[in-house]
Length: 280
Ligand SMILES: [Ca+2]
Image 1 (tube, rainbow, N blue to C red):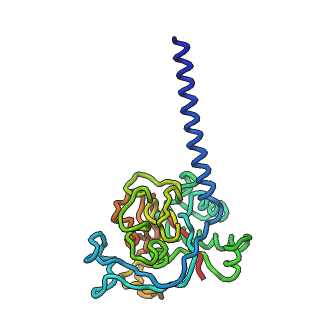
Image 2: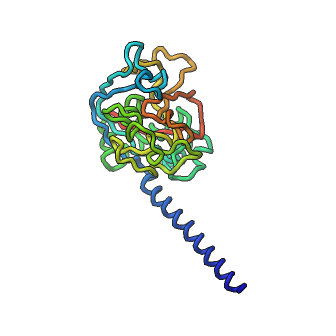
Image 3: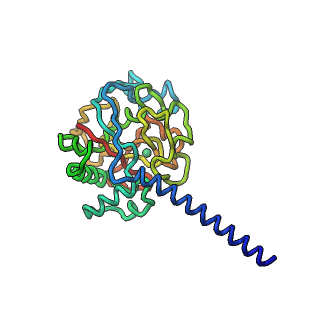
C-alpha cells in the first residue's frame, strides 16, 4: 500500500512536471513568435479618422478627450505608416541594451522575454527607436528597405496611435464599444506575454493596444484640438508626454482607444512601455 502510494505520488509529480513543461513550451513558442528580434510591421492606411470622444455623448470619456468647447470629436487626416503588431518585448529591449550599453533600469530587462518591456523612460524609448532604425538600415528585408529609402523608426504620435487602435468607426475599444477581458489584459495584476489575446475584430490586427502596458508616444501632452504639426514651441520645462492604452491593472474606462495618459519623461514604471512606428 505504502509502495503504491509512493508510485501514485511519483506519477502525480511527473504529471505536474509535464504540465509545467507544456506551459513552458507554450510560453516559449509564443515568445518566439512575438518576441522575435525584429518588430512585425502592420501597415495603417492613410486617410482621415475621428479622434477624441465627447463626454456628453459617452459618459466614459474624460474631459481631456473632448475636441473643443464647441465640438465633441475632431477629424485628423494622416498619411500611411507602419506600426508594430506588438509592444516592444523584454527580449527586444535587452538586445538594444546589450548592443548600446545604454543606461537603463535593471528592472526593464529582468522580466520574462516575451512580456512587454516596462520601467522604460521616455528618453530610453527614443534611444531604442534610434538604435532599431540603425539596426534595420543594415538588415535585409522590407523594413530595412524602407529605412534605406528614408523612413524612420519613431514612437507613434498620439494621433497615429489612436487611428491604429480604433480605425475609422469611432469605436471605444479596439474590438468594439464594450469592454472585453478576453481581448486585452486589464483589471488584472501583472503583464502577460505580448500577443496573448486574439483580436480578430481589431481594425488592423494589432495586439495589446488596450492594456498590458501603457505605450509612450512622441506627442507632448497638450489640450485638444490635436495639432498634426505637433507644435512644441509652447512646451514648458516640466512638459508631460502622452502615453496611450492603459495597463494591466487599469479599469476598462482607462483602456479605451481615446483615453489620454501623460507622464513625466523620466518616469520609469512597471506599467509603462512602448510600441514602435515606421514613418516616412
Ligand atoms: Ca498596450
